Image (cartoon, rainbow, N blue to C red; front, side):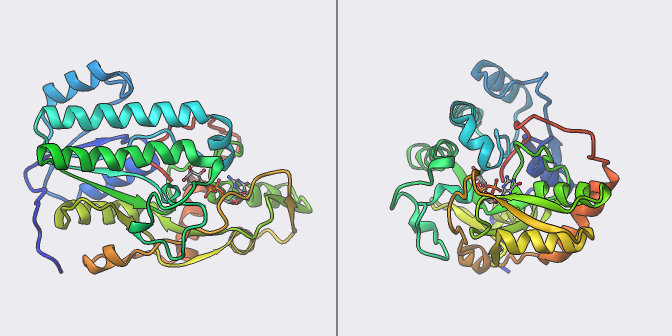
Length: 328
Ligand code: GFB
């Protein structure tokens, strides 16, 4: 196990975006650390307002920051609201990173996404593939904002010596996910579609696109654990991929979800919807070499999320809010 170079013990740790899926997983994970957790609701501080962010940081003086706040969404939301995804993410990350620098935050971890990489990057995608080719058009707006976040961390490190690092998670899922069928990612959408089809004895569910794109999935609790690990053991200019090391096609995923949910009908393809990137399987060698390994296996992770979906009674309670926290 690598040496702990930054201990969270006794530190004031701010989780920006604590109500989102990633932020709430970080809050759950940080309970195990001997630190003082700081959070702020949107009514206390609007992260898109520079003066509010600076005033809050000045008043609360965090030692460490996990930047998990973001406007996030699935392929259709990204494609439909490019201005929101670009503007909101740029402004909130710039506000938080700059304010963190101003108040002398010791360490900051910025969360991005695997969509920062070129659409046709070699697989598995290594960190060095960043900015080596054109982006996937459906989410280039979000990707550009996340690339800017990485660059902000590198720039403050270079100019001011700030210990600001970045983690790039693969497609995430878990408790607190967005189950709205228009704005969600594929995993919650499939869970909900299969569940509702089973309840209503429907003959089929519809998946978007050809079903051939491959995606790598990681349970959000694994992602939170990896972020806390990186905060403690990593300090460097390069962002670090956070993945599970396995991917599958969307059709294979749909079959797996149907099996877990107990839906036995057909799977139909809606070819009017986009496929997006054909494959974005990341290399997580850098993270593995830092002594971190995922704990969840995919099937077991989907089963646990389906259980929490049932407990949270999402059916009939539809959120249209894409501003749910860090991706994705
Ligand atoms: O998860 P998803 O929306 O995002 O879609 P991306 C993944 C794949 O699943 C695409 C297909 O090929 C979709 O066409 N898919 C099939 C579905 N059925 C469905 C469905 O019912 N709902 C959804 N949402 N997809 C996002 C980016 O890309 O990935 C974000 O737009 C972010 O910016 C995130 O980077 C990680 O993986 O294509």
